[in-house]
Image (cartoon, rainbow, N blue to C red; front, top):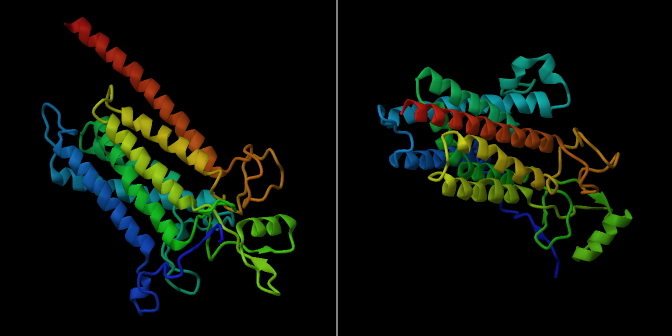
Length: 330
């Protein structure tokens, strides 16, 4: 019995493949709709619990719609800019930055805005929330905390979209849940380590076949589970026990950063970028040769963790100062 799973042949990036006009509708885009809708539902649930209310203000649905709209817009802007300027190695967008938001290729074929960076979306979305709160004179930390709890469950759908697209898959594995993705790199069956894996997982090789598509970690599903569902449950449990406003603002990047950092060892980094830090030089991206090889995503995760810790320390000190001032007044 083969010890791997073939990517389902009935799954296509298009929702209606082969149907004129409707073929433009893609699962990845639909997952974005589900993601924002789920985040909005969780946000509204917290609002109904009074998470946004103060002594002089009770949150209303109009404010929530406005907050979401501006935050999502900034999130998309940040995600697109990061993807083009950090993850694209051609240098095209640095030379022609107006192409970052241009959805056509040089032949005027519609391509959409392919390429989004989570870390860029995090920065853009956070800036959007801060700007909106300051502009509308709302408590910044309280609103960001509520949004921080709302994001992970929606994020789950984003990674499911990557899975349905058959993209952002992981490194080669012999685990029985390893999956053969149709767009993954093929390897020569004459390479010893390739032949060893083929024999171990019981993958049939046809006579005369020279290349083979090996199973990969379904890292999109790992991320959907840990960075989405598990992180959401942690934040949801903590929400009514947080010691001060802004606690979720610090805890979210720490939790996400830790989960993503370790999952990156199973996810294949961008081939063009390779490793930013390499304990083993010229190591292939499709194999986990060394735990000391660090990708761009992992470096950004470490920065998120450090930022989260810094936020918690700063807000903890702020909370102590406020308590002392209150005690002095009384």
